[in-house]
Image (cartoon, rainbow, N blue to C red; front, top):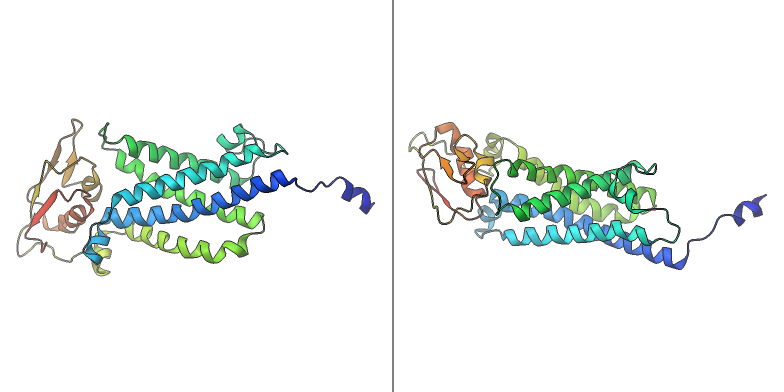
Length: 269
């Protein structure tokens, strides 16, 4: 009885073993660079690198990390199409739960597709100004969450959880921490020392924007929507003298501007 059962269980071919090794390696590269992409994006968008080091964050580094994450993620997915056992097909790689796929596969499919969509819109944002682009870009946080779930569930199912546990926690923890700090209200960031605590009561804040430097990324609007408004025609309108309650948001917007086009007077800048 035992011999008959063992007879029908075929060992994986050397070809399939090699394909799965490529899928595993590309997945680990994608996971690490994904976490670094998220962390670098938050640090550069908020200006926290400049605050701590005095140097500007290179947003190009964020783009390079995102591109590498996307490339290795696509390699990870497409590699399964080359398995001899034909356990995966193109439909299963595009549609969640196609062919009765597992939840971890669905999380990976949706996460990667969202990551692709965010990356494509980020590359096209200069040609099409949209006030809603910044909100759509925040979908990347949800995408990273799904891909992290896919990675950990996959490692657990394949018996590799003990191997990647230390490395996974090491790169995931700072990414999660920075994401939490990114969504905290300005008052909490002031208490943590990540934003200046000036409220502008003694000296009102005056805003000026260098039109030549401004590239209309709408990041300032995401930080202080009641002060900065990107119009449908691509023009940026803003309050020159915001209220005292808006000062922490305005300071965050000035730090987040990648072109350093926003100048503040009377805010301790």
